[in-house]
Amino acid sequence: MTTRFADKSVLVTGGGSGIGRAIALAFAREGARVAVAGRSAAPLAETVELIEQAGGKAVVLTGDVTKGEDAARLVREAVERFGGLDVAVNNAGVFGAAGPVADIDEAEWRWVFDVNVTGTLLAMKHQIGHMRAHGGGAIVNVSSNLGVHRRVRGAAAYLASKAAVTALTRTAALDHIAEGVRINTVSPGAVDTPMSSRPGENAADKSERMRSEVPVGRAGAVEEIAAAVLYLASDEAGYTVGSDLVLDGGSSA
Image (cartoon, rainbow, N blue to C red; front, side, top):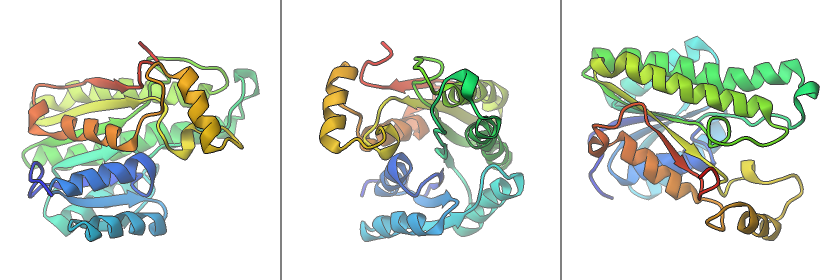
């Protein structure tokens, strides 16, 4: 355990697995009290158990950030549990079904935008509302290298939604930095989580594909993404506002 975030309260959405879990664990290891949020309690409880086993402090908060009342409640409950909210990480997101633009299902398109864009907006809205009234804070949104930085076939809804997250983050950063709320984005490429695996692909097949597709020759580790998030949330990044930090092994270079 270290102390970079000692006495800090952190809210992580989408904290039940993958990148979100790694982010929650990383904050706890550096002394933060972590509210781990998501729609399903069971995986969140697993994250909290891992944090507590390592000597950290965390709580489960269930809610759906696509609903304004839930987004507000998550902030309220984090503040009630820990006495404040210093950092928020908006990681909740979905990929959606693959397919060309002409075949996109309208309901699928709306669902992807509802979770990835509206969910980020509503979460930020209430996080900023608390932070600007209580001395400021830091927010990091998890976007993707797909969208602004790189395009692929068959994933228009995801790419468009993540491009919107990046633009939304930068606009929010300009809107609220004078109120002491510092907002940035991380944009991972392929990371070693199920979301980056193709249907039916095993670990060996995925590793071989990464060697050919990613200039660095592998998928990213969730811990590498978490380390970048912690940097952007820390006082060391105090001059970093509206940044979009790409972590993709050179895929969009």
